[in-house]
Amino acid sequence: PTSTPGSPKETTTTDKYAYAFDIDGVLIRGGRPIPEAVEAMKVLNGQNPYGIKIPYIFVTNGGGKTEQERCIQLSKQLEMEVSPGQFICGHTPMREMAEKYNTVLVVGGEGEKCRQVAEGYGFKDVVTPGDIIKDNPDTTPFRKLTKEEHENSRIRNYAEVKIEAIFVFADSRDWAGDQQIILDLLMSKGGYLGSRSETFDEGPPVFFSHNDVIWSASHDLTRLGMGALRLSLEAMYKAVTGKELQTTAFGKPQVGTFQFATRLLQQWRKDTHGIDAPPETVYFVGDTPESDIRGTNEFNKESENTWYSILVRTGVFQEGTKPKFTPKATVDNVLDAVNHGIERER
Ligand code: G3P
Ligand code: MG
Image (cartoon, rainbow, N blue to C red; front, side, top):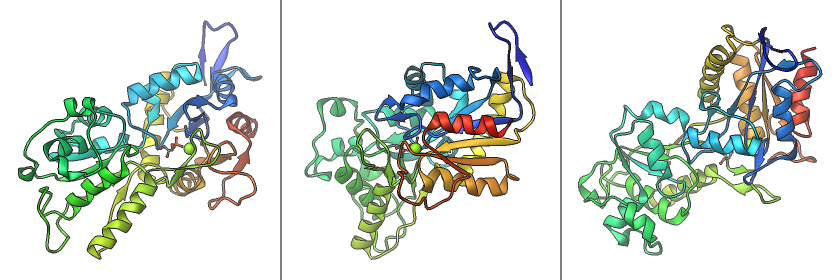
């Protein structure tokens, strides 16, 4: 363990274990912190009976803003500093696709935010649904662009532009319009809008930043998420073309996301705490069995038993049901989850 001199009470950082947290339904709900979240972070930062600090990262399927912006927001909500070096959101691993595709359609989120995220990842030519509607307002009969959208949208002749891939970065704010445009592209001749393929097998690939069908927002009951849009799109594609649509989702429970998280945690422990070895155990705290618990359990198998799943009752999972994927522990809230790990390590 490394010690931190200069703090009022001498604290030591443990190199033995670490935490990874889901955000929605664990730390935040509908933009507000879950009551125990602020306290849980204080415990990790050394306010515990043993005077130890425990390294941690955040792994959310959410997105729609740059990692930097999300961290500023999370810092305010949790009353402590969160750095992009300890943060992954659903679309973070999509940055690795920026080299592969030139012109891409980016769907979802508020205003121009997702275009900015994609450009920040190095995508060279980013088209939004707003650009396409501005070029041809007949694209979406019932959606008119707002004044702001109209000003920001980039006009050009999309019949001559080959769109090579479709990325759903964040939740759609207009399911009907966005799905119409995605379907138009999927059914096009090689990604040129306005054309129709005879075989429906030459459209661009579609990537979603995650596959959560439901999630935990401010409503008492769960709300539909991006995975629901994915199901809807696949069903509509089948209805209009008679063919199956293959799409790809990033985020949890994909093993690639947990591998990404492992690398991030390793770098974070090294840069911030001077620890240059992998932890024996990573406690993952989540609220969604299908994403958080499934992903952690599957990754645990391939990482020699180093990931330990903890399910909380403050989000998607509710008492009285049996979770589809069984966690190592189920507790009431994130503070209990943190304490569970600390006691287990004694
Ligand atoms: O849209 C975000 C939501 O589906 C899940 O976020 O933090 O629970 O992974 P999170
Ligand atoms: Mg969650």
